[in-house]
Image (tube, rainbow, N blue to C red; front, side, top):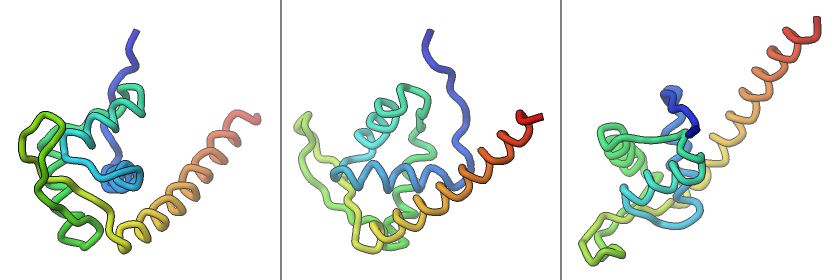
Length: 113
């Protein structure tokens, strides 16, 4: 049975995109595929969410983009992290670790009784 899908919490998509692009530059479709693949199909992002997020991250200076030929031979916009994007990813990872650790403490307290 395949894992069920659920909505990505607000603000998490940016962090996930930065993480995927820390591995290697990719085009939008490739980013979506990697997210789905690595998460074992739990994280599935539609184009209506992905491309506005990529544009927003590019506007913030966290991504740079260039048009190149994709593996299918078509032109595609490839995204890569900038130094500012790499620094932001470190901030996002730290914040996520603190939040998920705090949530786990709360869950653990509820089961300790």
